[in-house]
Length: 112
Length: 117
Image (cartoon, rainbow over all chains, first blue to last red; front, top):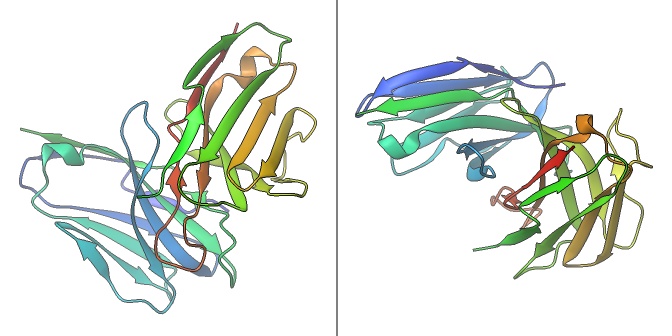
């Protein structure tokens, strides 16, 4: 079952912050976050594993609430390069099956 | 970092013909690779899991006789779209996991834009 992302689209000015949410109706083993530029393949941002803590690098971080079966991606002080479509990918069950089911995507546009 | 090379990047073919897409792991061995399809402005949909030395496993609704997957070596998986029709036009992407038990996520190939005319 496909995870649900919100919002569907975000428009920001450079330097502003954004939060993208991902929720699932099924228990999750892990949550992945990817960014895809138009016409290109998705690029891995980070993975959060069950039992793991919040992760982040640079100005992008994420959290994973296992009980609520939700994850959030935080983009702070956004840059023009952050523009693209963000997908969360979830792995269900108890193992690292590799079968990622992606959310419908959140389109982020950062304007100067 | 780990690189997955996918070819061709774009292909146009006539209805009824077959198209082969290659996915190679360049600096690591991938016993498992994954094939996704993405229609314009939509999400990536997992089509099948390619297993080295054994049959691929297909997701529900994906025709295994139409989308032939071969994973003959630890570095190469191929997807052949047989008897292609215009509705098969899509962006096909492969992926592999560098460290199945680690925190590295999945590396994607650059994708193949298939247009069937």
